[in-house]
Length: 114
Length: 112
Image (cartoon, rainbow over all chains, first blue to last red; front, side):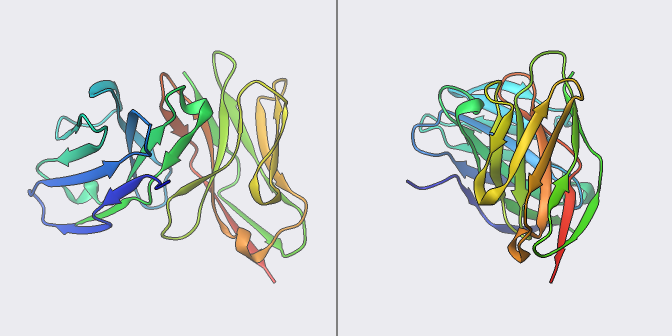
């Protein structure tokens, strides 16, 4: 089985631009979550989606948005990029019975804002 | 609210010696706790998890952790370090619904 796949792996954007990151969960996993990991820190929760509905949101500005598609893949959008948005963005999918049964991260998208 | 505190930002050991990475947690209910490892330029890999079953949890690559409610601790140990263990380690607690709350990380260095 394929794991959690994220694209692209690396991205360079200019301040003020918009970016879209993509994630495909493990087959059978209906929940997708997004995390931001700034260099030297632990990942911070951004969003969780389950069955195409937002189930949780972290302390991030409205410039961050996401959605989940019928095939359970997900996109994370960030508008009006700031230098501080430079980070590794991680996607995770969780087992249908909940994260205690399985929670798998992708390898991430490294976003650099210049 | 749930939180974790990793007590050491850096730990250095010699190859073949024991590893101890310390973590304290705070939770208003019985927590689910995890240890994740992140090698340079890699994603996160689950080492082990505690979900209110046995208090001594065995994980991959010889790591284990013990849940101690009286001390609110969940320290990660390994009897003998290997060079390949050098990485960043995160102690994690489950927050509301299906989200994870990460500690600040402990960088483990292993010297030959």
